[in-house]
Image (tube, rainbow, N blue to C red; front, side, top):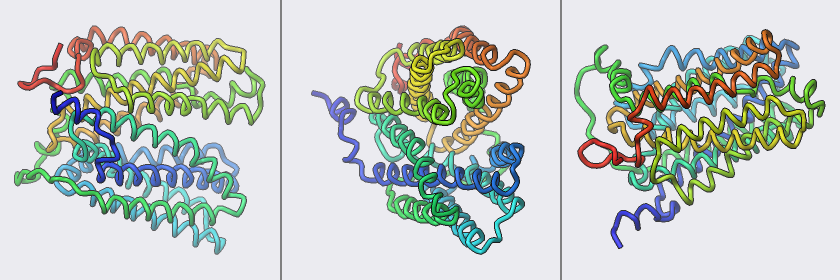
Length: 416
């Protein structure tokens, strides 16, 4: 038996630094979810304004867009685990500040919105550093399984984090912020324990050319550009999250408890598929599987849009979440494996903006089309749009559609 298959099937627990990184992401994601829940509830208690709740998301996305080129360049020039640890330390201080201000009755709308900008700034560096660090902690043969396993943990944190935050919030917002600070600090400690071989960095002086290198790399790599843009347009058109309250109240008539289940259904589907992929990763026909997953995502969204049966709607959202997870794992694997290590920070920064834009603009698109076509029409149109995107991308990016293995064969050509 060859060494590569043995390595590809090696237990992930054998990669100590990756597991410490995984624990850190799990704790950090749970803390961030609780932090956002607490800020949202506290802000709405203070202002009673839905506009302010939307403003929190916008204020967090704006720094990521503004700092995309700078963040990517920083991640490629300095040690990534130290950047990530610094981001987690900053979030620890934010949580401590919120806990103290809340306990002293000093928290205000201005303070919460200002700290939202700071959190967004931190995430502008945190997301690309996380994405670029993962491939350095496991061999390339193991990366798809590692990303699937990592996604499973993230989905678990996304499911449990808000629930835990809501439970602790009974004791007050300060208690939630205190728990967030503890989890952020724990995540930072785990990150500082990560060890990996650091590639020699280029001594080339910082210039506009080096800062824009990541953008040029993406533009000239059809597989990478196709994978990143596929997520942007598929989620932009097919996302239904922003309209779930309307479906719960007016279409399915299930009330708040039903809304909670509807919001959890995609994450449950994603968690289930990520566990499957961590055991049995996609090894062949990667491009076709990716495009097929996007088409399934669109079809499931379409079913959700026309459904008036609560059980069917839950199942459709779970299938959509599972299909999206297949897409996420394949896309991230293709992007990370096709990108040289010295470019991963800049490419990951651009990828992070695409992901943020698809989510934020997707919510705006859903709301705008719902005002025009109604909620059902908006979701149905979005589902059809995602299917159309999958078909179009197969024609616009034939190299992506023809991609067989996740990793390029020696010589730079993907195996077909």
